[in-house]
Image (cartoon, rainbow, N blue to C red; front, side, top):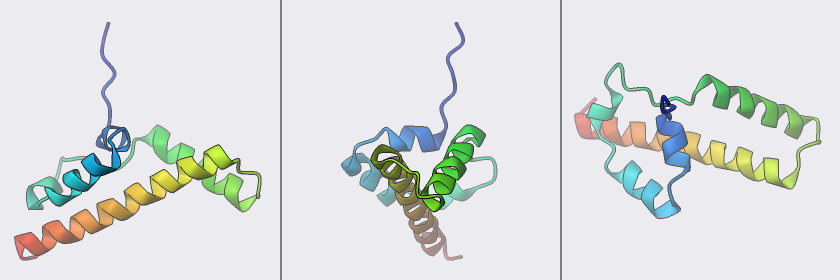
Length: 91
């Protein structure tokens, strides 16, 4: 049976908070080179849109709000990691 390939996002989201902090701390310029996918899968992006729409419609459950918050935290961490990597690389 073929093993499903997981995205970096999915692996990151399955880490503990401490593991996530360590992952961001070691992020460097090499992680920004072309061909390294740091974005969420199409399926995950679709889910985030669904959650945002539910939030706007005020129909979002507590569990869904928690899920959305995790996605938003990941987005924020990736932005910080990219800035840190650029600073280390001098660009």
